[in-house]
Length: 632
Image 1: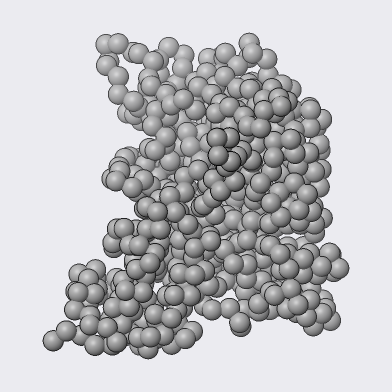
Image 2: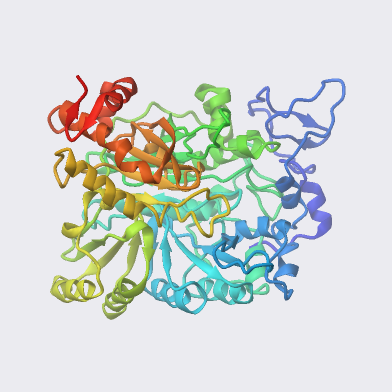
């Protein structure tokens, strides 16, 4: 790690390129939206008059980043105070270190104001969790959290309910036990998702999982601020591949901040969060098209040759703001395997330099690509990379496996996929999982469906594992309703400050009521529909890809999205606003009846929605008389 930067050094890195940089510029695409005022490079263009090159507007967060000494201040100072909370400036920096300051709305005392606590999120590339780290996280949930472990939709852990007095010790224990939280939140590359299946006889899975880790290393902050804040400057040895280090420091095409403690990020980091997912041919478990950058391993005759790449996915949007929208990623091109680090870096740097920094609601890569078009974005990225993207390699059809139940790893051992209801590990189930993971020293994988994969299981252990889990109330996949097995939800109330209504706590009951409604109209008891729920429109549980999405739009009220597909390749569309949770049966009974009576053989719900269209479905709702009948 580079030494702590001085205040004098920071002044040279106010913009997106340092004033002293001498990197070659001749091959750079000078997009019309980029401007240079004096020696400072500006990001995407807030309009300014040509005759008066005024300082462009920047969001408040951009100023906080600039003045923080690479994410140190005022967070270091405020963690040392006796206050139960930290300021907004410090809270913005805390995100980069791996968490959010939260207020438990249900624990507020009358007249006492907000009940502050902290959430901590880890980074687990491809969801891989060493045995030692799982046990530490399980312990911390009890000693410093709210007694539960939260598995996220991006294959990470969240600990909720940490008090400020316990925050530093919590981070230290994670860091010293093979874990990290650095970059789990904030305007930076987040946890890199990857197909988590622990196959030992299918090399593409190992390749994807290793690449997820390598990309996480490539785009990790380098200034050492993380250790200054949480370990008082003590540096822990981290190991990355030499090829990763070489790619990060390569500046042949003007990508780097020369001499900066942050060669890729500079003082300003990225305009907004940046999400990457790595998958394998045919396996869309990770919902790869929802990422800023989606990557798929390409094999030829059993040999790894390269990668297909997509860009510009993202779920976040705002109600009543048509300038914000969910978007699935667009095909960018193919790169040979030796070029992947440089391609990832090039795309990241293009987002860094041209993403908007005046309006955070327009700062994600998807808006830049929507504005420019994919051809222009590709041209800019190619200049940063120094090579052309090639045509996409042909791939097989996609499906979305859950990985639940028992599977062979391919090396004589087994893995067992455990369904965790909306990712919340608690109570007797938490104790039972701890028992088998500790007893057999099992490594764990976290899935994009908020489930757990117990890996490296000797077949001789199977019976004991099943008995121990069953005693703790953990259901086998054969006992789980398919609606529940496919569902995911964000935490929402009471901790998320953006939540409008319930999600994690509300979805189990709604799923049960939807199943009863489906049964009433004659659908099979094992009919599977992919359902997702969020308590606000920001899309953390990716509801806009679901066959049936619930997006909170008021107290106990949801915007209904229909038309996503079971293989997660199609964006859903808004079908109805302000559907009250109390009206779920009334609203969906005619829809499910129309599906039951009008579907083709084996037709999935999302495919049926897209074939017949919204007008037909709304007409069916209007003509439905109940009990399987229709108005004449």
